[in-house]
Image (cartoon, rainbow, N blue to C red; front, side, top):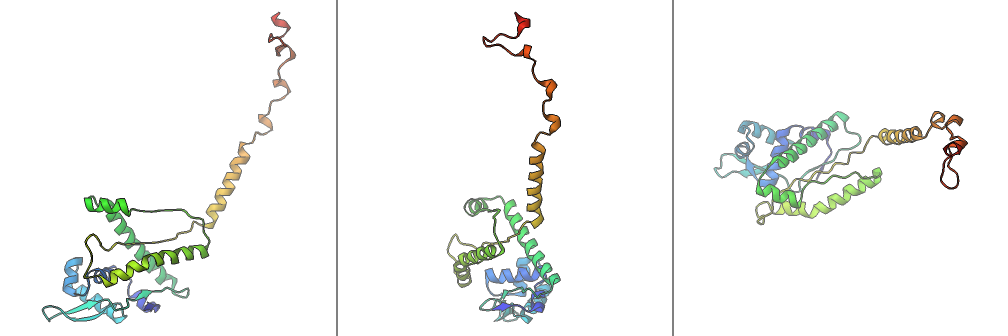
Length: 231
């Protein structure tokens, strides 16, 4: 299910709501109280935000919990996916994109700062990757599609194995962002390189004039001796 409703997308513009979605995705159905204990938030706050997420179809009622007094929440099947269109409000788009980027960057920095055997093993095998590629918008779109296709089998597996993960497996965050350099940056660098090349050429003032040429008397003769004054 793809969500394109701007109102529904705006419903995600709160960090705790994204935390709740991630928790339900990795841990399965949970009550507001359970979510609050894991996330360090109040039960009332989690309950409010879960109801708002349910209003727009991001979560659904999973029936009563173990004590039969509080409802559980879960992600619907299939899980909703966001789709921002060109006609969406630029303010909404920017707000959501900034929130997602801030969230992912914080998670990356927390991983970088972790110093234990487990994180070292993951860092050695998975690690961080950066690159500067020369691509067109169409090629960037193709790369994104290929990246999603590579992830798809693992995404499907994670959805099916929430309660039955093998030892050594865990949920890992993946984040792809193609951020093109400003167009003028490339042109400016090319112009600057051209100006440096021009500056390296000697101007007329750097060339030796007639007065700098060696005198006939200063030139060595054929047997290596200097001019007449040395005889």
